[in-house]
Image (cartoon, rainbow, N blue to C red; front, side, top):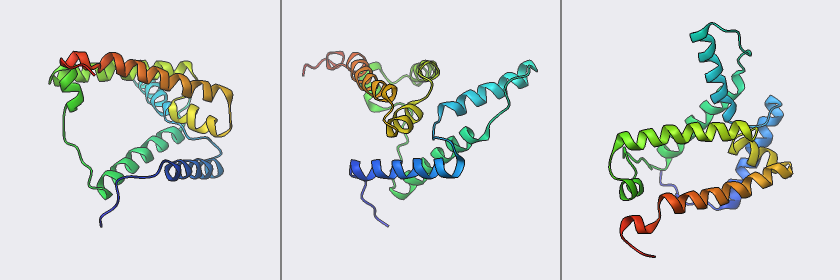
Length: 166
């Protein structure tokens, strides 16, 4: 089966909105992923320190699992597998070191989780779930997300690092 790899943004937005409504109707919770990471950290804290922490909620973990399964199915349906240990844009900017890439990815994940904790939600929870409810903090977050993304992309992947001017 050959499927078109390009989607219209309105179709994707509508599907995300429909998925969010169904998730809310079935589970009485808004979709979000950062809670799953906090649940894993909470569980590890209980295992390694024998401390009593908040009870685990399985909804965020189930939602994260559904996201991973959906990503796998999408790559499978569209035959869109990329088996590269270090992305080519990273190689051009920083070199081919897998260790360097892994360290920066890990540190970036820590920074992203700290930001998600400060903003009381991840991109999915804050921008999509609360944005659909026209929450002001969600729209401020989306603006800051775009500005921060463009600024950090410019600083990290700037053309003059590659010896070219644009």
